[in-house]
Image (cartoon, rainbow, N blue to C red; front, side, top):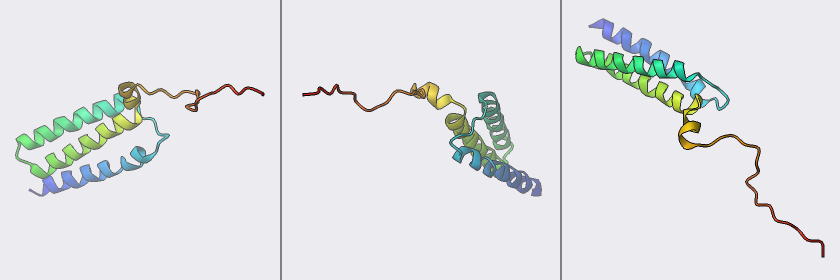
Length: 100
C-alpha cells in the first residue's frame, strides 16, 4: 500500500525535526508534552504493528524513542532520576591557609 510509505515518510520527517531540540542544552520541553507524545507514538506503533504495517510501526517506534530521549534530556526527568540539581556550590575543596 502506498499509504504506508507516506505515513512512514511523514513520521520520519517529524522525528528528525526533534533533533535540534535534543541537541540544545538550554531547551526545556514540558514533561506533559514529551510524555503524551511518547505514549501516543507508542500506541501508534503498536496499532500499526498489529495491522501488519511494518514500516509505519517502525517509524512510530523510532519517533517514540526520540520523544522519550527528549523527555529524559530536556524536561527535567534526568535531574529528578539522578538527583542532580544545579547549585552554586563549588566542587573545589576548600582548605584553610595559615599565614606563617
